[in-house]
Length: 456
Ligand code: DMJ
Image 1 (tube, rainbow, N blue to C red):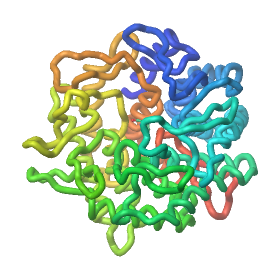
Image 2 (tube, rainbow, N blue to C red):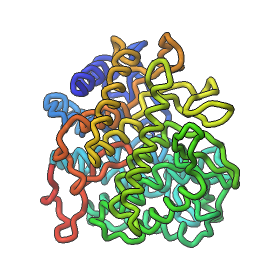
Image 3 (cartoon, rainbow, N blue to C red):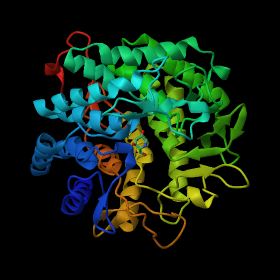
C-alpha cells in the first residue's frame, strides 16, 4: 500500500511541480519554501532513497537524471543550514550509499563545502541561516538573544562525519566535534540542554528545554552518532544517556489517566504539552535501550512503548484519527489539542516512525495495527486527486486541506510505513542508522570503514 501511496505522491509531484521544491496538491502547482532558498528539487532529493528502497526503478532513474542535470548549488540563496543538511545532504548521501552512483557523492560533498562558512562564528557554533553565495550567516530573528537553535546545530553530526569519510577531508567532522566540545564546557541547568545557545558569547539563551521542536533531533543524533560509529563514540553515548536521565527526572510525567508524556520545561516550570514532533522519542528510547546503563534496557523499551501508546491516543482521540501538532495534559484534557492553532496535521512522520522502531524491537503486532489505522486515515482524509495534503483541524468532520505535500511525507512518512510492513532485513539496524529525515546512513564498522561493507 505504501508503494501505491508513494506512486500517487510522486506522480502528482512530477506532473504539477517537477523540479520545484514541493507540490501544492489542491491547486496543482509548485510550492516553494524559503527554507531552501533558491535551491530547487527538495522533493526529488528527499524521495531518492525511498524510490530506491521501494524498487521504483524508472522513477529513481528520472530523479537521478534531474539531479545530474539540474541540481545546482551555485545560487544566490539564503538557506536554513539544518533543513538543507538533513534533506539535501542526507538525501544525497543515502542515494549514494544505496546506489553507488558517484554523482550523489559528488553533489553531497559539494553542498557540504557550501555549508562550511556557517561555522565562522567566535565559538564555531554555526549560524541557522547562511547565504551560500556570499557565505554570510545570521540567526533567526525570533530566536532568544541572537541564539542558534539546539536542534539545528545539533543535527549535523551524522551527515558531516560521512562527508569527511567520503571526501577524505577531516574538516567536516572537526566542525561537528567542536560543537560537542563547546557544549561539554558549559554548565547545564539540572543536566538539561536549553534550546538556545548564542554562537558569539557561547552562553545559553532562555532556559527552555524541549524534546519536541527546537530540541528533538539533538538528542537523536547523540544516540545515533554512537550507533553509527559501531559503538565506539563513547562521548556521544555518555551525552545521550546523561541527557535521557535528566529528561526522565525533570520532563517525563504520567497523567492521571495513566498516559506517560514528555512535557516542556521553561526555567524550571513545566508546560504540560507534548508536540507531534516529540513523538519520535518513543522510537529513540527503544533504539537506545540496548546500550542503557545499569540494567535499564527493559525500562527504556517500556518508556518507548508508553510514549507510543500516548501518541497513538493523540491520534485516536481526534475525529480523523490523525494526530494534532500538539496536545495537552491540563485543564481536564489528556492527549488532546485545546488551542485552534495546534489542531493541524501536516503529514508528519514521528508517530509512524515510533511504531516502526517499536515493531522492529518488540514485534508486538499492535504497532502494525496502529500503522494500518494511520494508512486508512491518510487515504481517507489527506489523499486528494493531486497528491496528499495536510489538514487544518483533525477534530473537524470535514477536511480543510492546507494544500502542501511536504517533502518529508515522501522521505519519512511513506518510508517508515513501508519499513513497518517489511521484513527486518530491509535496512537492518546493525548496519544502518536513519538521519532525522529518515535517510539511511551506513554504520562505519570498526574493522572496515570503506564503502564496500555497506549492506542493503
Ligand atoms: C522533518 O524535516 C524531520 O523529521 C525533522 O527532524 C523534524 N521535522 C520534519 C518532520 O516532521
